[in-house]
Structures are given as structure tokens and as C-alpha cells.
Image 1 (spheres, rainbow, N blue to C red):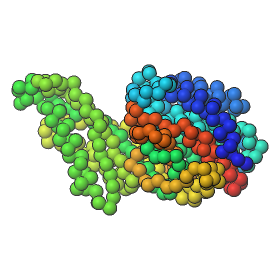
Image 2 (image 1 turned 90 degrees about the vertical axis):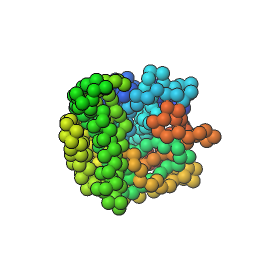
Image 3 (image 1 turned 30 degrees about the vertical axis):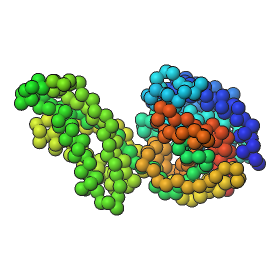
Image 4 (image 1 turned 120 degrees about the vertical axis):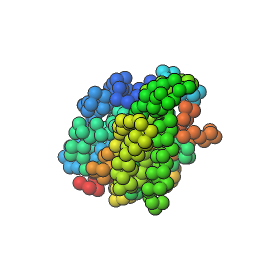
Length: 385
């Protein structure tokens, strides 16, 4: 079967679906229009989609044998798009991470897979997931029964800084992520009389600086970690010391041992510093995503299926482990997974990374990605019946 040619035959539909999704991004778990669009397409293809969570969707094709899960995330970002595209979003949100493409690719796979249903020697379960950007959607889907009966799983992500290619990595491939929020509590005062209060702005700044010592002085250089404060919210002013400020940040590691250690030390450090300056903290982890491990055996199989699907027309290569995180890691912790990247840098265009307001993607790579998923699912079920 030439699945690449089949995918190219529906390319105009892929573009139409993708641009509709691109113009109408939604965020988090609240994806009413996106999920409705996906469900309508799946019904049109002959599926009976079901909701997991309010706006998460699964659909199946095939019967008997083993089950392979194919996952796409659907949510956008609260970032204003500045791409200048004719079909750019103008609702204040954007698909600058490319999840519109992920959803489109999986719809394409679903359409073609239905036409090949008689060839399936097992079950293909499609997942359309909300809230990946919050790093909590995957866990919510798993808790709701997503993986019941699943043997292996696959997912992919676009990479707009890399030319056209399909990229694989075995073993630990994406970092663990623990996003956090720290409320630093003090006592408000006039800025000219700080002795009358307890300054949470100063305490917060000391916490931010001290977090770097955890990596520099408590983690072996044989390990790696990053602690970044990305948010600092203060209701004070130039001459007002507020009662409370809020810090938000992220902890990333490639080692579960290091992650567990830093998860414990980070709130200890924050509270210790606050107490030293007569303040207090409230610490909350907003996400808890492990290292994404690509199962070596499955990844080697999928890589071979990818090479078979795209032939010499597209490059199949490797990617180095990345500090970025992905909540599909929750799935990889429970079943063997293969998570690969799709190089989507448009030719002759300056490349921007995901989450950049000016990022653009090479839509031509949607067809080979469809072919890779299609051939991988059909072939894996056949080889592992």
C-alpha cells in the first residue's frame, strides 16, 4: 500500500481543516468548538466518537487483538498571533504550538484508517486531548479510562525550526516538568517605612535567586536540571509594600531521582527563606509530569515503518533529548510509547520556535505525517497480533 500517495490525495482537505482550527483556537480544558468540529468529522468518516472529560474525545476502529493508541492534542495558547497569515487567529489565542496541525494530522489518519478497516489485525484508538499546554490534560484522560486495554501508544509534535523530516529518539527524550506557584506572604507597609511591614517582594526576589543554588550546589554535574521563575505578580506600587506576591515557575529534569529530590527541596527552600525574613509561603505544584521515555523496541519499529511510508522522499533521522516537556509522558509511564517530531520549517522563511507569536509551519509535512501514523498502526498490529 502506498499510504503516502493516499495522504497526498486528501491534502487539500487537511489544509482546509487545519486552517479552520488555526483561526479558531481555544485553550485549556474548555474546547467546545474544537471538540465539536473533531466529533463531526469523525462521525462523517463513519466513527462513533465518545467524550472522555467534557471536551476530550476517543474513537476506535477495528476489532479483536491488541490496541494501539494514537494521540493528538487540541488546545491552543493564550498568546496573540502575529504571523501575518491570511488565516491567522484574531481572538487573542493562538495555535503557536501547532496543536491545530496535530489534530488535523490525526483526523487525516482517522479518515484513511476507516478505509483500511478490513486490513486491521487489532484495534486503533484515536485520542483527541485537551489541556496539554497545562500539562494536566493527559493525566485527566488517563484517570478517566483512556488506557483501558491499550498495549502501545504513539504521538508526534511539530518542530518549526527544523527542515522537512521525521525525527526519532530512544529512551529518555523529553524532560519531566513540575510547574509551581508560590504565594509569598508578608505585611503591607508604606515604601518609605519598610520597618513597619514584612516585604514579600524582597523575600520573593531572594527565593528566585536561591533556587539557582539548588542546581548549582545540590545537584551533581552528572545530572541536569533547570528551575525557572517565569511569573512574578505583585499588587504593590513604587511606594507600596504589598501583603502578598505570587511567583510561578517550572522545574525540569531528566532524572526521576533528581526530580523527586528537587520537588522536596524547592518548597523547603522557599519556606526557609521566607521565615528568615519574617514571612510565610504557600507552595503548590500545578503539574506533575514525568520524563517522557520512548520505548526502544517500539521506537525502532516505528522508525522502520516511517522509512517504509515516506521512502526516500523525506528524511528520517534522530533528535537529541530536549528540555521541553510533554504530558504524553504520563502515558509513556504506563505503556510502551513512541513520540516523534515532524520537521516543519518552511523553505525560504525565517524559522521561529513554538510558542513564538510569529511562528509558521510547513503544511506540506502533514501528508507524510499522516502516512507515518497510518503505516505504523496498521503494521504494528499486524506484526504483533
